Length: 266
Image (tube, rainbow, N blue to C red; front, side):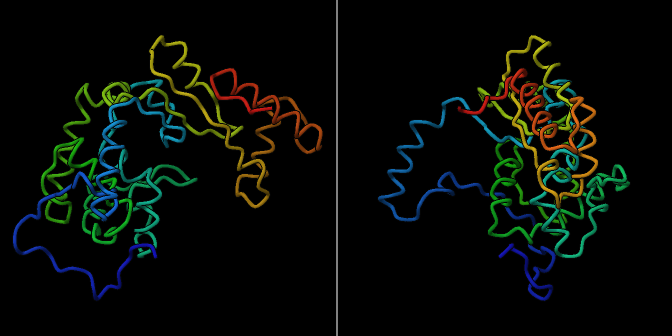
């Protein structure tokens, strides 16, 4: 079940005014009162500890450049496959949502893409995506009404204005939320220049990479053949030969370890 609803059960436009955005403190805890009390106590003991994020879904370039995020669509919608896959499953084109393709960036206007997402917010009822988003909207951006077609522009303007301030630059957010370490994910064919730039910048935030070789180990991956050629160019090894292929992986793993990736346990 992906949370989608048949067309005839979709809600009518809101005629009673804006709905409040409610994020309950116990939203992830068990319903049983006794068990919930234990969960509250355990959570209270760890909630203020530093965050260790082993798979952060972030771009290393954020931390290297520390530029302002461009707009709400490019930060929250276009990169999130949990959101755009749901919308695509209901017949909405990825281009219209601002999602880039192999051919290049999407031509969609960011505000129009956001409006399209907001108009279809009901598709995410009872999904984890809705819980994550509502928390971000309420706790990070201070929004108090629920996202829908009527509130789309209010959301876009509020988030866009926040993203233009120094407090919402990537490194400022890293420090505000007490992140001790966050791991990005790169392919063996990806450049590690952003990680090298982070290390050279003198910034104290710890951002490491994770070695994810899917494009060059899965023969069914759409990038498998060109990926092997890229891996050969990067390492100087013959990746069409088994021993050269293994040697290329060893070289790239050594490169990843050099910029902070945790080496494999013997």
